[in-house]
Amino acid sequence: MKIAIGSDHAAFEMKEKIVEYLRKKNIEVIDCGTHSIESVDYPDYAKKVSKKVVDKECDFGILLCGTGIGMSIAANKIRGIRAALCMFPDMALYARKHNNANVLVLAGRLTGIELAKWIVDAFLSTDFEGGRHERRVRKIEELEE
Image 1: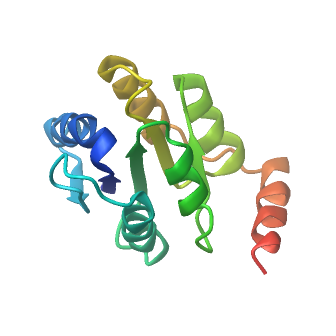
Image 2: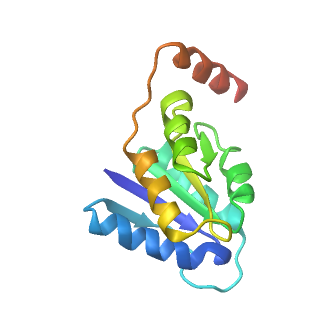
């Protein structure tokens, strides 16, 4: 499994911890930045990570910003991305199971690191259920046209 990850300055420290956590689990990580706490614009990182997912360079993306809201909005503007802001593991589970989300968004200022790890684990270990949900995901894709 290969994951693209990116954050703004507000969630830089959490991103670094998530990168370390994933690598310890032998998951390949492409770190798209940012690489410091210096102020940056989150849409730039949403675009970098989302492009890697859409171009199939990575299986999934993880984005982090202070609240997760800005990253969610920005990533969901990119055709083919279904980014889900998840505050609890069950949200991540259903984002994958029912919505076939391909980008997980975390709130760096609102989520503790242990909870964030549980959310990441739930997201990455859950498969899309398909069935009746396929029809709904197709309807989401039609909205992009």
